[in-house]
Amino acid sequence: MQLQLDGKRALVTGSSSGLGEETARVLAAEGASVVVHGRDEARTAAVAEAIRAAGGTAATAVGDLGTDAGADAVAAAALADGPIDILVNNVGTYDMSLDWSTATPEHWAALYNTNVLSGVRMIQRLVPGMRERGWGRVIQVSSVTGELPQTSQPHYAAANAARTNLAKSLARELRHTGVTSNAIVAGGILVPSVKKMLTDLGRRNGWGDTWDEIAANENTPFAANDVGRTGEPREYADLITFLASPLANYITGSALRIDGGW
Image (tube, rainbow, N blue to C red; front, side, top):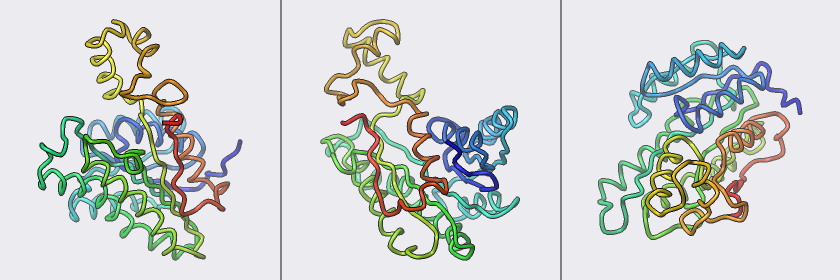
């Protein structure tokens, strides 16, 4: 399928690794010019160089979106070579060790700042230009925990509920402008950090020693779903890229679950 992304420019926040990196690679492969964002200059540059080596177009923007000054710097770098048509708010963090008894108000505030306000900062800096030009895409990367919260990580679940509702509220604000706003509601994503966690968990629980052995047994109550495995980054990146394309003109205000039927 031709996604008609030639000539579009996309900023993917948190794209120096993990899902953000995969999303930037897929967008570039479909013809978009991408801006790779991260806090580590060397890692960010390495992803952009790999995209260029594969025939894509990529620039970099380095900065901490947890502050207004950092968001200003990232927006300025992203806009240096032209307007941004597609904003993928992917930056996020989590800590599975925290629960109601250990997550302090400071933990709640810090996580909300990173997982929610970082996206708000970039929306406020980049979406007005999209509105003026009459076309744009804003995509929030949220989590199924915002709809199906567990006893652990209550602050993470609450932040993801906010991320999803942010996307829906923004869609109402942008009605009739040509700019759409959606969220993907993600289940497990097999990025390197998650693969390592599952490998360690599998060895402790006797699922096997190698990743292939553990992967065959990982669909436990810890990560149960109807498909029977954790989602690959590319499966998420493909959906994000479709939502970013002109083919998704009629989709806005949606929270699309991609979780293997969790």
